[in-house]
Image (cartoon, rainbow, N blue to C red; front, side):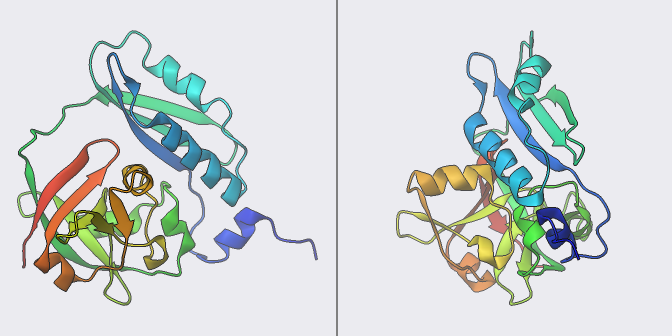
Length: 225
């Protein structure tokens, strides 16, 4: 029997999955270019290598071509499929006001820490869409997912951070079942955050921030149903 390749091994962990692509969502700013481009590309190449996709060697060129002539901030999405095809789309980006505070709630939907595809940003979004749909837009700006051990994992579009008074933000480890977010990576590398398991009780005892590379850190208040 021939040996299984990387993609076959990952697919065997979730028989319900039939197809997916890799995603990176970036912010482009006039005069600055792509924010955290190096980290986004590093994650894309790493994910492709782990899953057995071709290497996305043309990604940066296609990103740059997509913003040529742009005059204002953009939200840029890159989708990379198993056949090596890259699609880049863009839309105007409107940043949040600095004083913005998001309302967040806890989802009933659970993530499973053994699902290694949760560590990769893909078009497989059903769990996150299900969690987001538990609350109306007016009830929550973001929804936090827990794993099977009731440990905090991530939001539907953000990483979770807690200011516990130590002077360094705390964020859940990847082993809990979550994505290695680009903003999260930057904060960890800059020693502005550290890895540590979080419970809902921990969130009640500190100051919550949610964030991603597109929007940065956002202060959040946890609301109870």
